[in-house]
Length: 173
Image (cartoon, rainbow, N blue to C red; front, side, top):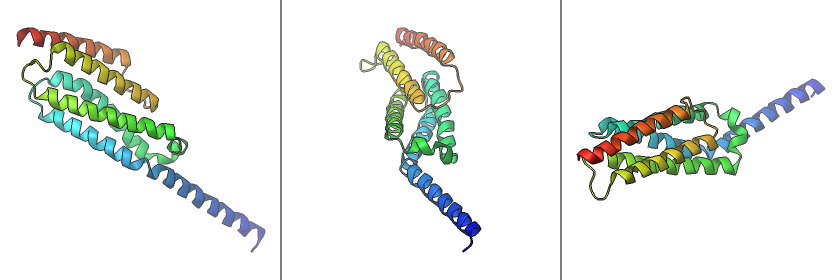
């Protein structure tokens, strides 16, 4: 083989190694990304079927739809995230994000069908749980370096408006 052919052969070999490395690194993340995408779809489905409290549920809907874009982006451009996919810390952050989405799903599911606040769900408890989950979600998004297309401060204003509605809900029901 000539020197030029050796260089071409080595380049091809290196390219295949890099592709295999990317595929291997991303393969452990794909099931987590798929689980996150499934949770997002379930939350959207709950919102669409909800009978009550759509306003509060929509505050989480806004957030999870932003996350959906980021998850799709991650899956499409895996190569650009090769370094991140090799970090245990990033994997752990994705797992925490998945856990947060599971909590949000439970909350939205319970609250979306609640016609009135009963003893188990006082308005202040709902407000506190909502704020806690919203903060947990926003923190997870920042840890994953997901770009937020909505201003956090604007989201907080919407959240505060919702707090007033929760208190009014308590008074009237």
